[in-house]
Amino acid sequence: MALGFEPVSGRITVQDGVYQQLRHALMVGSFDPGQVLTIASLAEAFGTSNMPVREALRRLAAENALEISQNGSACVPVVTRARLAVEGLAAELGAPRLTAAEIGLLQRVTDDQQAIGRDGSIYELIAKNQQFHFTIYRASGSDVLFQLIETLWLRFGPYMRLLSNHVAPLMRAGSMEPSGRHVAIIAAIKNKDFTRARDEVVADITATQATLRAICPDVPEPRPVDFAAFGRAP
Image (cartoon, rainbow, N blue to C red):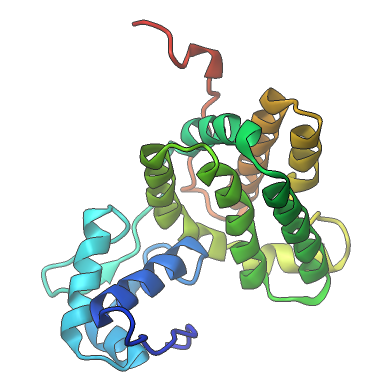
């Protein structure tokens, strides 16, 4: 299992180190949907005993990021439908609160994506995509909303892995934009058009899901979201 896991630092517990690296790996598409993760293979990859791996898998299962079988192995689950609603809301709340430094970071990440798309690693591109989106979502100031989004990315990340063989040739040929809708998102934020920024984030996610459905039919059709309905009395 060549996933680039790093030795766990003495500054954190072994269990936390295994958990954090596995969690990140799920979010950035290091595993395939339906892939089985065994305790023995993960322990070997991390250079640890089975116990911290078993506990890390249990914690990820509690977050609905993995499904645990009776023999203790874990399976990467299928995708859920809730991304458009929660990520669109987080973008609308976060965009007005972004600092100049954070907007600069969004621009640098987007520039990196365009360079990576020409000759870099698709997995590095996926990690940059997460950094871009999470910078906006963290600015929302809602810990609960951000935790929901992290959980959704844990479940959706493995599907991003399926994109690698499909999109890499398109990016190399210049027929697909490596940064998706990120240039438009930044433009909307700079223009203080935060509703448009939200809509561009939703369009970015929808485009990714459309590409995935072309190669993976079990990815569900996104449902339109009425953002104006948020906050209305029932």
